[in-house]
Image 1: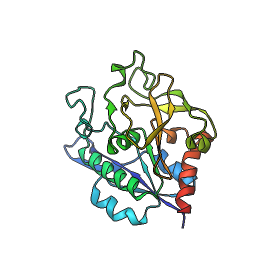
Image 2 (image 1 turned 90 degrees about the vertical axis):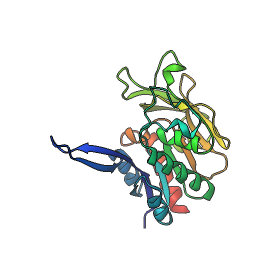
Image 3 (image 1 turned 30 degrees about the vertical axis):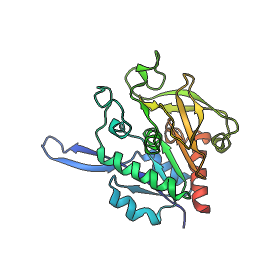
Image 4 (image 1 turned 60 degrees about the vertical axis):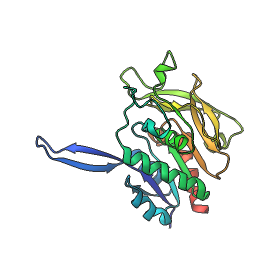
Length: 241
C-alpha cells in the first residue's frame, strides 16, 4: 500500500446562504492533497482534536502540519494583547503541539511543517515567535500590501539536507505570513533565510526527517519541481520506514 500521509486541518464556520445557520467544517487547501498524491502518497485529513490524531497514529506513515492562523501567544509567553495577532483556534493549537511533540519523540515518522506549521513546531519544542514582522523590519517582503500572497527568494545552507532534497541553494517561494521564528528551539537548526534575515527553514538535529519551512511549497509544487521534491522525499521516506 502507498504511504498514508496525515494532513492537519483547520476549523471554520460557513454561513449557509442568508440564514443564521452555520455549518462547521474541518478543511485543508487542495494543493496539499495534490502534492501528496503526485508524490505517490495517500492523503488523510486529521481533524483538529487530539482524540482523532491519537486514534489515527498507528495508520499514519508521515505527517504534514499545514498552514493557518496564528498560534496563541500563551503557548510561548508571547504578547497576548498584541492587536496584530489573530489566534482563534485554540483546539488546533493544542492538538498540533501535542502531535508534534509526540512525533518528534517517536523519532521515525517523517514530518513536514509548513508556514504556521513551522511556527507550531518551534513553539512545541520550546522556541518563541516574532508577533508581527513589520514591528521588526522596515520593509515586509513576506506579504503584499493587502496582506496576501507574495513571492521572494530563500537562500539555503548548501550542505543541509533540505538543499540536497530540493536540489538547489536558492529557491523561489510563495509567502503569506506576518509572524516568524524568534528564538529557535533547542534541537532545531536554521538552514534557510529570507533576504531580510527572517528564518525560512529549520531541520531537526535529533530526528531523521523533520523539516519546517516558512513558505508554502504546495502553492507552486505543480509547476516547480524544486518544491514538489519536498513532498516526494517525504513520501519516499515514509514508504521506507
